[in-house]
Image 1 (cartoon, rainbow, N blue to C red):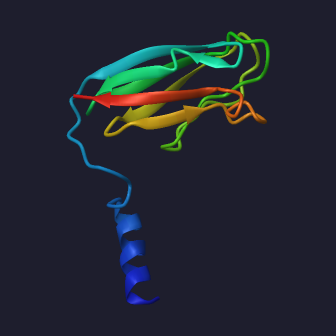
Image 2: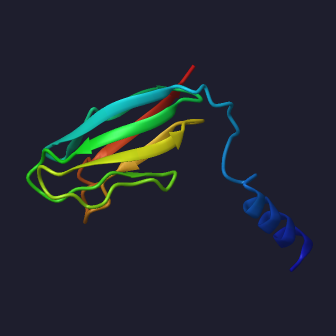
Length: 117
């Protein structure tokens, strides 16, 4: 391995490349996200920086949906009327979320986790 690649690999393995560091608050923000047509409700979730975020995702739509977050956390693909709890982890920065089924994201199934404070 060349020097730069070795440093990048070591940072990745040590966790230093996983995003901004934040001191956990010890608090948990819990929200419920549902589906209305091709939209998440709510489509913006505000979470204090350092809080753990727990999302109860309820597929109240008429099609299969999931909720995928850019930090790698996601639900399974849920049938209508199914529910899953997603532990999104400690929130250090804004995160995008979307439905990864077919072209649902392009049809508007997006969500923003906004880190506040």
